[in-house]
Image (spheres, rainbow, N blue to C red):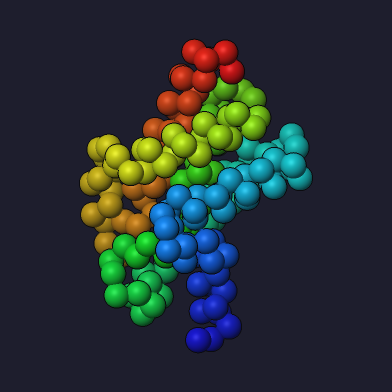
Length: 163
């Protein structure tokens, strides 16, 4: 495997989190949580901007990885490919922060994690239809829709619990 392919593999598997034998999508989402919190600690007032820029760049890059995915895994949507969960989590907290006009605290990140996982598994329309897009486009797109659903849902739900 070339150096470039090793880097691709590392990004696509979220540093190897997607190789988890148990619930790789859930474990891979933790890479998104770590990235979001790291950005929030470093970027301070520009956190949302950086979340959206990084999510956009990773989304486009991930969509362009169809050939690599075909060469590396026999499945159309391999469980090891968790970059979609990382980006989906960034979308979740980005939507929440934009609607809430503040960054999530620890409770917000916890709620974002669980809400994203629920909506990623449920695949409400049009997320299920987006999954039918060819190659890595379908792998990536449905999770971004799940991120939008999750961000809106925690924005609506957290105030009901006093957060």
